[in-house]
Image (cartoon, rainbow over the protein chains, first blue to last red):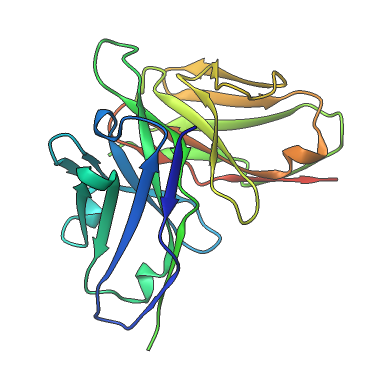
Length: 125
Length: 106
């Protein structure tokens, strides 16, 4: 079955960076886009960006350009997200998700059919 | 960017009741709309995609409808396990989520 296993919680200092992982199993990793989603405490969800493992192509929410870097390691079916120059506003839970294609109008669209368990990032001195 | 406005922000209902949650997009999203359920301390789970298609394994008491800019999620015969937060998401143009609806038992 499809699983997305994320790395553990992180406590980081302001101004530092953090890199988290998302190991996929149960499907062909290179066939599906992987998205990352932020959930601040008690709040809604924000799409950060996505990466296509087969080519490394990426798309980002404008808000997270320069903040998030997305990479993959095809040999281990693992996606990574690095967040830089952290502030308290970056304290949140971060999820990786699999994008399920939906060509309902002949063009590519994708919703999220599988989610990782989330990584809690706390930015504090 | 497409904005998603979800209502109500919170909802209290009784067991067996029918509940409806609404979502409005800032422009036509041509049925590129999904609904997710999130229980406390858990990851969101897909319920509905393409506005009205039920994801595998989701109980039939959940249904989605709508078109254009207006969409809704209906839960028939509310069960205790339905207590959760619900989020809509447009995926027509990248992805944007609604603000969420917290559903509690009355």
